[in-house]
Image (cartoon, rainbow, N blue to C red; front, side):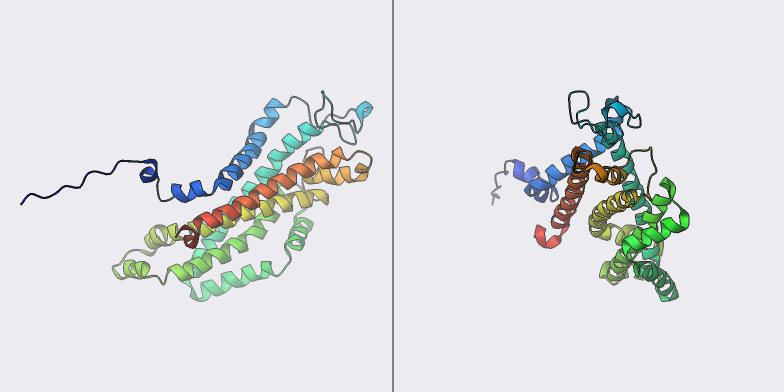
Length: 292
């Protein structure tokens, strides 16, 4: 008896979508947030090449000049071009934020994996050290580190990195404790798979989602710390342009020339808003309960 063959289904846009692309397309806000963040990154990378004005040159004859055709964002309290300072300052703000998060993630990942997978006294020692850092409020910890190390670019990076390490370490430890009890990990251990291979192939891939979301939030917090230290005069030192230092200097003339504070403040607010909204969108996208 001849078998009846079903007619092949036409390939449509819906069938071509991957399991990850379909929920991505439902989060239109994620596309907007990624585009805006890419715009800030492009400003930091190629902006200083496009803006010809020197951000450190003072023009005392044009102090607090309002925005005009020659200085689109106006000039600050000593006649420096605000547009040039915002563009060049974005490079330091974003670079320090990215470097400190990367270092904190890398060190915290190693410590968290050791604590969660090895356990025993290794877990106890690592977590007690991490708890010691978490006892201090975040800004107080940064101030203590800067007071010990001194001001400067390298010391700001170290201070913010030290703050990020225990956050990532505790997250990775919790994920490792959960994953090492899963059946696929126990099965791999039962057939003699080396521990390093289990961690690389089974544990790390299954914690990428929470790590990605936490990295996004940590990036925003790092930027807050960098600008906060700059506002207090403990970050990058003049004449290097930095958003926090610009806000600190501009607050003295904010009621006379509000654009001196408004321009860098607006850039900072928009950047932090984009990063936090991006973290929320990634959390919703990568949450299995949202994708069901």
